[in-house]
Image (tube, rainbow, N blue to C red; front, side):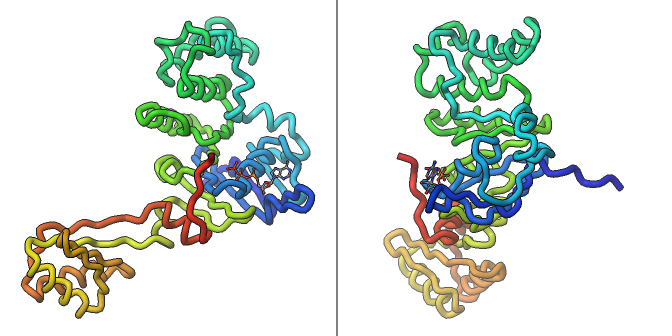
Length: 318
Ligand SMILES: Nc1ncnc2c1ncn2[C@@H]1O[C@H](COP(=O)(O)OP(=O)(O)OP(=O)(O)O)[C@@H](O)[C@H]1O
């Protein structure tokens, strides 16, 4: 039997204080190689501080951190060579075209002319920038600049890539294309850590999510696990007539299922606290000789998970 690969990121008991502010409090995090891990939290939860420590930009006050198998405090320079961080648009030269920005970066990182050209072409295509490739970056729209910024992060093949809200500021089509690109990164073994306040982004992209609130980890697991643990599924029964709605309401209430009735829409919603509650809904309706026109199931969103875990509604970045 082969030993499991060492995790790409291992954080143990990390604390970070800025004067009196405790930005991180006893944080643990393990990310396997080739996984996408979402750091989810409201403003000030500690996401950027944690990424800053992982990327060797900040020193933890306490605890241990290994990235790409290396201790970040003992070997920061080697860690830096293995990682890439986005959201730092300062690396873009706005007077140069998108193509030249990418090409120059590839050359600076040591690629030969042909390899640099090939990498540039692939990245322009992946981020849908081919048509605008030869225009100066200063003429790009906000979304195009963000895509170019992401592409710049990926010029070097890094073991770990840190992305800050990769979908923010992009239109829906570009967002999907970007998410797709992020997922493809992991196929080559790259580990991705993304910080986000957008629950859909974490839900769609991440294999596992760590929810931070006030510097502490309040939950960690796959988006599905979190939803199962916290969120409740619900079943909505749609009925043909007002009379059926009333009968179904009595039948479900009689079975102890506490339906919520939306009379104008002739719909009844039951929270499924246990798996067998769904069968109970169907049985109660059948016993009352009611045939619903439709039965729909709703999975909880990460929104509810976040609210349940932290007591906060999610707050968007300004
Ligand atoms: N350099 C600093 N000096 C003092 N306090 C800081 C510093 N950096 C962060 N903090 C504080 O640490 C806490 C965590 O901040 P952090 O930026 O890590 O949160 P975040 O989750 O990334 O938030 P956002 O989504 O707004 O970027 C906040 O209370 C913040 O005010």
